[in-house]
Length: 143
Image (cartoon, rainbow, N blue to C red):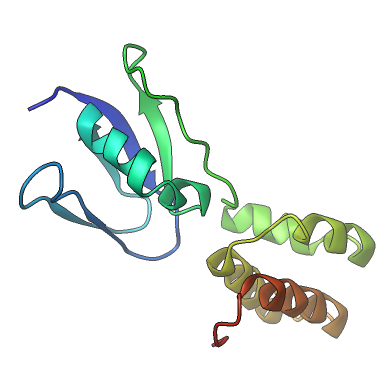
């Protein structure tokens, strides 16, 4: 088995099931939020080639990668802490509209919407969030 060279963290606000069975037989991980796991270079390569969305959509984030690994680090997009969401919601509606237009992950948009409702933000904010959710839902049913 390859030496463990990459540490990844579940940066989503939900459990994340990770099946590495194609690389390491029988390896299934149920990652709670903020859980960090070490992966072999083969497991990481599998994830980056077959499941890049797990990084790009803000579920997993590479927090440490061995310099000798020839694979490049996939950056996690659309990752925001609760504090960052609060700061986003504190923006003026014009700035908020501009910033939220760059978010394309439904899970994060739903988290922002929940925080907006909890913070009693005006309907203007909720409408902007809902518009962005609908834009990125690709026809799926919104819950």
